[in-house]
Length: 189
Image (cartoon, rainbow, N blue to C red; front, side, top):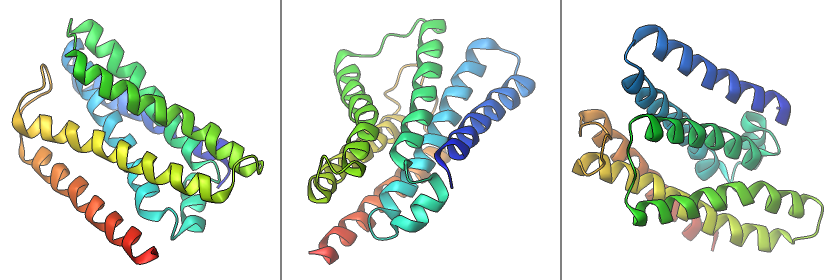
């Protein structure tokens, strides 16, 4: 798939999320929260393609998200960030500084990743350097997703909703993905 097509697909999916949520729910703050939540789940889905398929099935990953798969994920997560900031502002919620620091680092690595991938494509970074970067990238971003669902299950997120069954399922799924990834890393060595 071409990067432009994948990016258009991400933007279309985000537009559908917004349209459906606002068509079904009329309370603005609750609607913004739902848009943010479903946008985050879309980002999680895209990230799961990366963590499961890289590097073992890179051609399948490139067919699904394009050769610029890190750029496509960064775009989806940028849209999620904008939606999250709009929701937090509208709901007058200010997250704890430690949560901001962890999230800032995750967004930083997510937004730097397409540049790193471009440098590797242009042979300015070796594939070995890129592979090491991808291990750090995948583990750190996975950890942030994990902590998001740990917070949901523990009920410790202000305005973050309740610890319903879906949050337990997503926490289990995100945890299982890392077990899968660690087995994948061990088998490569």
